[in-house]
Amino acid sequence: MTRPQPSVLVIDDNTDLAENIGEILSDIGVDVHLATCADDAMACFDDRKWSLVVTDVRMPGIDGIELLALIKERSPGTPVLVMTGYADRETTARAHDSGALAVINKPVDLDALLEMVEHVAAAEKPVLVLEDDVALIGNLTDLLREEQGVLPHPATNLALARKLAAVVDFRAALIDLRLPDGNGLALARELLRRSDGSRRRVIIITGYPEELSQAVRDDAQIDDDRLVVLAKPFQVPNLLEYLREMV
Ligand SMILES: [Mg+2]
Image 1: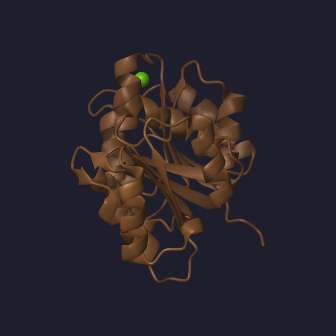
Image 2: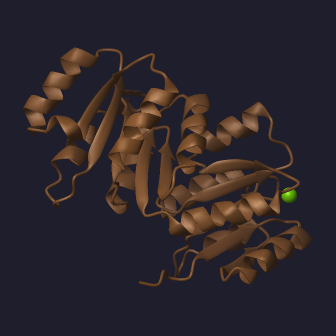
Image 3: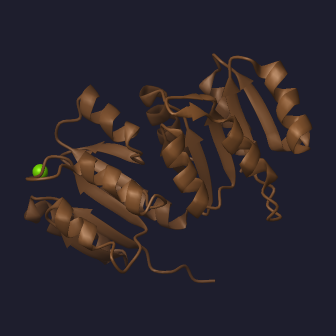
């Protein structure tokens, strides 16, 4: 089966850089479209979908992170890569908080960008990562992106996670329970219960593992191998090992 041609929307007010990125992506067979501001970029969602969006942060008008939030409203399943010459802690945290797939530094390492585009285009295993700690979600998302075939979809709040779950057929989900806008348990149950024949798997992160584990299993009649309840604080390598087994 041949894969559909990947499509990438690149937004940067620096047209030289945008064209440069556009050229190297076209060279590997990507369908590229360039925009120089957020308004132009949003118009590109009127009649089509994108495999990936790559956006600058500092632009006249709406900045790249506000644009990221707009894209997550409009087309939550579209992965968005944020590139910035000012990757300070605040910018990086804002980007992760709004659902960025990754934050990359300018000047852009074009080889690394190509690799990321190819990874996203080839990824067939979407994984929901719902965690409100912005440092942790950035870390988890970066690590999951390294896994072959896995495409992490980060969310730091329940509202975005629900929008994602409505449009993305997740292979697995990592769900923190305590979130700024509610508890992740109901979403975990829904994902496990969906009767679509999928062997979807869920990892729940909680401070009360035993109690919760039994409650969810009883309620959803879930096989043990589809649910892992991980106690906080946990070791990231352990979590990755579970995720590898699950996807
Ligand atoms: Mg700029």
